[in-house]
Amino acid sequence: ARISRAPEKLRVRGALGDPGGRRVAIVGTRNTDEYGRAMAYEIAVDLARAGVTVVSGGAEGIDAAAHKGALDAKGHTIAVFGCGLDVIYPPNHQKLFERIVSEGGAVVSEYDDTMQPMGWTFPERNRIVSGMSDAVVVVRCPTKSGAMITGDLALKQGVALFAVPGDVGNPLSAGPLELLRRGARMITKADDILTPLGL
Image 1 (cartoon, rainbow, N blue to C red):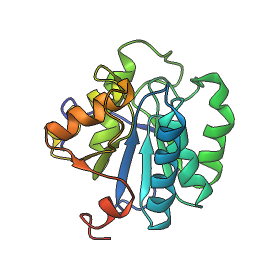
Image 2: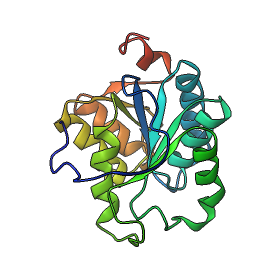
Image 3: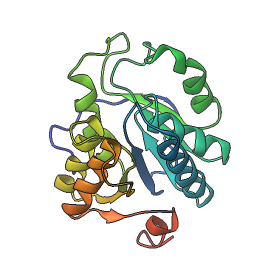
């Protein structure tokens, strides 16, 4: 109900999990650093251990670290594609997507199964990433990025928004710091989200 231009359909492979369960999106840049990768992974591990579904976009970098953290914690994760479910993008994530489905999670898309990724499909899918989540965590990204779009969408959709602080002057910190200025809450560990969610 929060999503503007809600998708007419959502194709799903795997299991979406408990409809009443909590979901938290973890997003950030594809071109991340070790700090970003570690933060996304550790937050995802602790969220998954608390029974929270970790949602992300299946991309390189932060997304992949979040999905892997949830899986390694034996938790539940959902990847929202910016293409059809028959199209593996990025191609080197085939094993990751297979693992998500085989270990109880899901890959989802609003597009027909053979739809190729386009420049506009990734910003479009971000409204689903935030819209299906109770909270969004932005880890590392420049001010112009898909993760910033997701953060802005969260604010518009009334979804709780969190951002991981980073070193001032690093372009990868610029996005989260800007979101903190706009009212996002700071997160340094999963407890910073679990407590507001009542978990």
